[in-house]
Length: 378
Image (tube, rainbow, N blue to C red; front, top):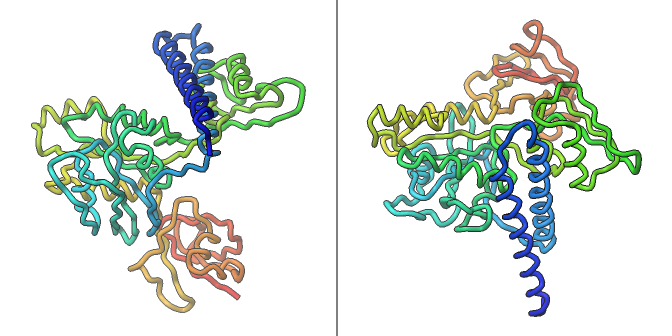
């Protein structure tokens, strides 16, 4: 247990660290980005990221856990994130079997409420969580619990209402602050650490957003001074820092604009041009909810494969829901954990094979949407 003196020291250290972060962020905001300053800006970003990284490491060492306890179910999990009173509970009730409380005031939802969306035979768990506000990543409101819950989701649905489209930038910032990267993929960068010899920067593409000296300076800031780094794509300082830290969660997201029934077409058109939502809906009036469900299905990267028994017709009524990139081994494991070890071969009809009924003996074979699979096992 900490003494009063120890707690005082910790508090002073935290205050000093936060002040240093504020100073660096202010410097960043006051520096105009151009070719001459991009290196300096990249280094300042690295300093901020490294300080925050140290803070998180100390906090995690104390064993503190955050987030709502939700048992995952179904083929995937989606979470609805938005400010209070944007219609999250109404949307959950409209597209799932849940009955989340709805009221005309903020913070109606005080915990995490799951619902089940069934679409094209996929079972998708959808979570309704309390609204987040600016500063959520730092602990304001129930922000940390909500954002921690988002980390366990396969899809983030950012729900906005037409009266506050500016909330989008705030939500994106809060998600980023909690190490979530929406609609992005990890940069194609490989770092090899060595004990001596300095840092070698190797590229297979022309770099336009960052130069080699800045890369070395950022690496040094993270105490990586010896080894080699191979860049196979043109990246910026933020992407490089993400690779170095290695603690980011990359997740697809949908931006849904709600309550479109409450504004005129001209206003809606202006808002759409400003924030470019993926879908415009009215949860209350059930407008475009079918379009939203289809978008959820596609964003989750689902494919449908059909199973066939030897000597019988394929069951084309109830597909097996898999993810894009799934292999025959994944199919076997989803059907039964022993099927992969007892696998002999499979006959496949569909887009993943050169001809219908082709015999495949390799468990690494990637299946495609609407493939028909006849498994043979020992």
